[in-house]
Image 1 (spheres, one colour):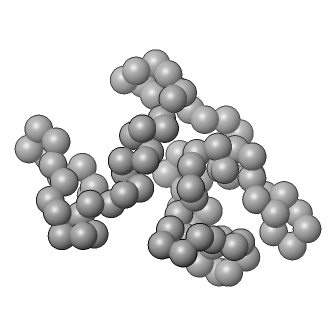
Image 2: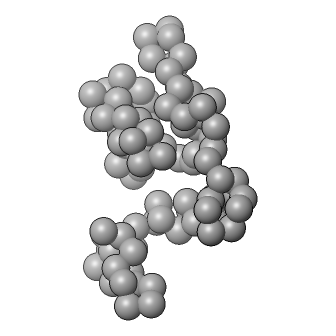
Amino acid sequence: MRDAIDRYKDTADRGAIQIKVGSEGYPPDLETLVKGVDVGGKKIRFLRRIPTDPMTNSTEWDSMWRNAMTRPAAAGAQSTYLGHDILT
């Protein structure tokens, strides 16, 4: 999944896809990686399907994804969970 996100960001950084201001080139959600984006008239997909979360046995990553994409550390806040930095 990380490779798919990185490939999307690389594609956005090259200017091949239109991104929203403030997204820093990251996909808005995991479904975008599955559905794909148009690049020069060609649909590029980054994931075949949303993977199952091994902790919850679910494909519902929405709340975790939203929390990760807010990037509180970028605003100077420290993001820890059980004493571990979750954003690095």
